[in-house]
Image 1: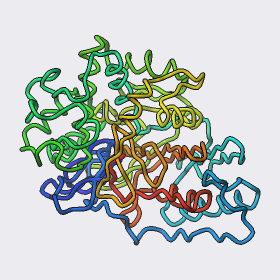
Image 2: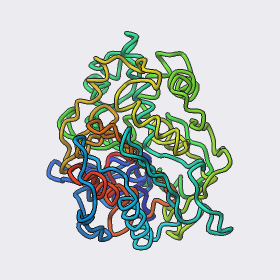
Image 3: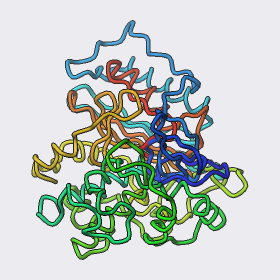
Image 4: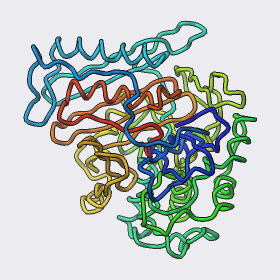
Length: 442
């Protein structure tokens, strides 16, 4: 998660922490700051914001989102999701508005879809504080670390083609990586490489916040990481790290012969039919889009970050999308299946993706670029000014997408998680989504 403190920036989607902190950062993808892992720390920071708290354990200090009273509500279906009756939808309205008020969220869109229990799609608040323009489901927003699910899908397609092996070491594809003869593709995708998170580097954070529109190259990002010693032997522990994804993006480019953004467009977005999702190469932002509000700035004051250049997140957090595309993507990435029933990746490779060893976060496992949190499969994202959450519950074939226009934490909780908690406490009380601030998903 992005933070405005002068701590080292965390990777896209991750929260920042002090460069010297031994805590593991949380999984939000592109935040420019992240803390380093400690064998004893139960926290995981996410790589999307320049700074953030180092704690990844569930915080009890977040906004009060009481469990929804069950009186008068239909029980969950066999798959675990309540029918979205008018009474349930009224509770969702109240819960979303409560989080908005407590956490001071300018605007949010929430979508819940089920095959036979109804759907709920609603926007609240404003997309632009200066004009008062309303938030709406059709707006583009930056999705931070959700980019990781697209990058890892590209890698897994190359695995299916026999061009990449999950247990190959990274030195086969990219030179100059510390421990490159030991770190595998699987460990990079699973956040177990031991490499330092470039977005937690103090110099990176200063470079980003001093000129948020400047471009960064993948090699520049790696240089910020590689000047630090490795944090632990490969595979020893979980540590959310944007550096891993930069390396995987380079693997895709080397083995496909294409630029990463072109490969993802042609081999991932087009086959899935995602016409409102893109991988920008600069600060381009299609219209209509929401403005974004962040305190991850040089002064710590809140600024509009809509025109900031997301190249610093690249394969870890640069992408842009829209609600309905993320609805489709949630099921695709969780099942490996295209909307027409074909395979996005092979069933065998999808099974590898969904092996989600436990993380220091209670109830959360992390596979190959994907979370499993209390049965919900997917990823969250955070980039200065924006957060998102795209998850799928296979037992009910239910999808939840949250998109909002700030990344400013509330009492050490990421706003996307607060909305995820509030919604799932109502619709799936046996499967409540919870990730602490600065998760590995940013």
